[in-house]
Image (cartoon, rainbow, N blue to C red; front, side, top):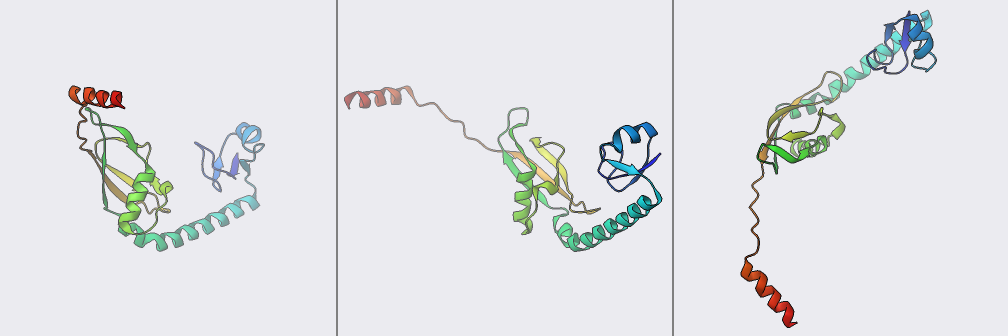
Length: 171
């Protein structure tokens, strides 16, 4: 049975696409929950029209953002962070951190939601991260995470502790 999806359905398709599903799935789940409608002739025409409009909109946005993609492509960002012996960070580098540093570097504001990270970066080394601008525009950025040099803190010497105690007792 053919249906036109009204909303994105995981493992099935995006909104506006025509999908072939079993009758029970359509009757009992998709249609009653408002996720899809039956693929009538009118619905198919409307889906084709909406898809054409969406494609034109994406093409127009791609043309506008092409110069930004060229600025982003091939950029190299360097982060320093505290890490343990095995190279695992004590914190993590998030999409917000990447977006902030990349925005400073290219001189244009970039939304953190455009940075595609499956999970935050938590180890030392180099990795490639995609920036999803629109449509097929997905420039990549190289991110290098290096160890932060942390001077070891030394405990106060025993003589300093006793001297401080003497000063406090005099007061």
